[in-house]
Image (cartoon, rainbow, N blue to C red; front, top):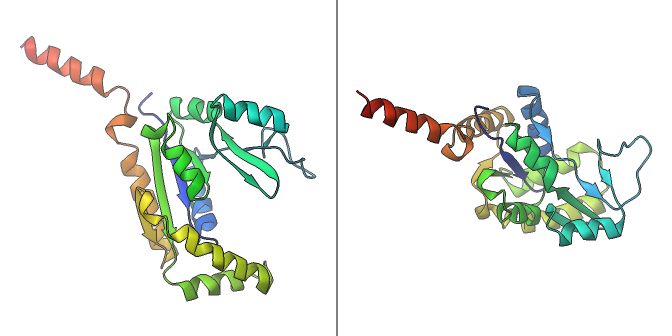
Length: 211
């Protein structure tokens, strides 16, 4: 194996372009995979266990949390959601990068987990609040009340920008995509991501001493 995988955490307020950028990253490198979350909610039509979510009972979810088998978890609208550690660890040990589309609270939990040495966290900022509002309106997905709720929540998200490794202002989608690719390509070469480096240095040392 040439390298270990990265846990790539992407966060942003709604409307900053994170979903579009994530899709472009997966088009760029189809080996990138999303972390499959566990949830206690009931499956919806067409959802497959282990593909869309791991569907578990509340008792099983709580057991996994208590046994530290979750990288991060939260309760949302009465249901629990979380990221199981085992499949993520297996992926990065196999040299595969795993994408996380989560908020700042989940990002902080992952950043303090026992896989923290392999985390790459990136926050996406909008160019302005007015542009953020324009994007939410132009999507045509929500009514005015929902949009206002998203706008109110956006500042809570933005206020945690300084806890991330990298922060990008998405004022141009193509340029932001290029910066993301540059960051990921460079971080894949981080010393902690190259498990064979120590053995290589030892071989160099032995070769040097045997001259």
